Image (cartoon, rainbow, N blue to C red; front, side, top):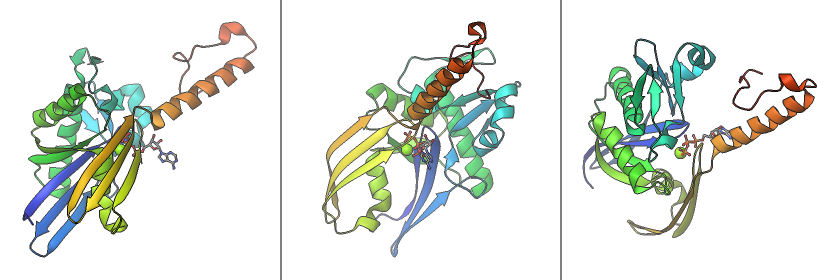
Length: 241
Ligand SMILES: Nc1ncnc2c1ncn2[C@@H]1O[C@H](COP(=O)(O)OP(=O)(O)OP(=O)(O)O)[C@@H](O)[C@H]1O
Ligand SMILES: [Mg+2]
């Protein structure tokens, strides 16, 4: 068994989990690193008018206030691999540059609150991530000063984190359904060996369910609005209505 510490980051569309694994000759210990005593971290970023950046729970807990006064970026992971540009305070960011801002906040928070200086990480990625999305993810981390040791598919990473609970099973299907993606791994385990027999992934998650529900509510509100001039399109309707 190799001795030492390693950090794993599961950068999610909605939530981001960070764990530290310490190994010594007696075994290993996993520590979950969180925010304000809670975990996972919230995958939200806010850019203030003076270009300062805030992230996580602080933004989530004041989401309404922040979205009025500052520029809020949610589901930043879903930008990776695309050519979409995000303009914040008049400055154009590529998807990996936005994610770098998030990773920088995460790294700084963990240094300040947990006293851990992260330099090297293993990252998980959705199995349907394109080569470009994987490249963007790695680039985002490295620009934030996080050297990437391993990239592991999310559903396989979920198995690795919980394999002690399903000890004895030789063929396992892991389903990880999140805010942006559905990931499935079929794995075969034999002794200390683990083989990915098959992986399947699709870009569908809680974000899509939220959008579907919002669109249905929007149609109901419009149906109840007798005056057709007062009916608003989906994008015009304020979230508070
Ligand atoms: N009790 C619940 N019932 C249904 N959906 C929930 C519940 N709690 C959270 N969710 C939804 O689960 C999603 C978040 O799950 P999770 O934290 O696994 O996603 P993620 O890891 O951030 O995303 P991904 O892995 O797809 O990038 C959100 O869409 C959220 O709305
Ligand atoms: Mg996830």
